[in-house]
Image 1 (tube, rainbow, N blue to C red):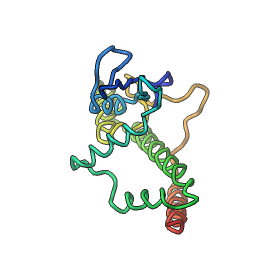
Image 2 (image 1 turned 135 degrees about the vertical axis):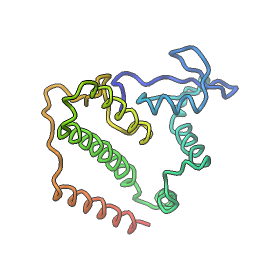
Image 3 (image 1 turned 180 degrees about the vertical axis):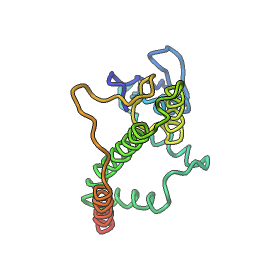
Image 4 (image 1 turned 135 degrees about the horizontal axis):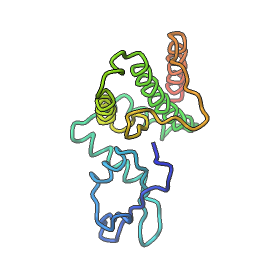
Length: 190
């Protein structure tokens, strides 16, 4: 999701105002949320102490979205997260969450690649613009968790890598089983 460069540095002043060091202006949590939705990584630091406040502000953004009725996290998941903070050996939770989001992004990328490869309309004039709109819509609907797309609407593959084929039904079943097994292990930790 990152643009590969350094994160956008946001400094918090003693007045609690947030300062964007790239554009030399003050920003709000909504602005920071927009940067992240657009695929930017951010780092928020206290100007006086140099403490990294990024995690604190990201959690605040999530809490504000949840309080506005933009609920993404079911109550059961929130309860499990709270329990994981109280349970010894909860170190598996961050890795599980990270792997889950990576699988989600990978699945979205494969879905879009398959839709584009199998679509006979791709030969029609203007299809590239329609495809770019589709990618932007998917990005907006998933809160920016969709894979990176260039201005041409095509997936950005790493140089020297071959495109992977779509997972078969058996692969998807295996992934679902792995997720189920991880959820069972997490439940046992509670």
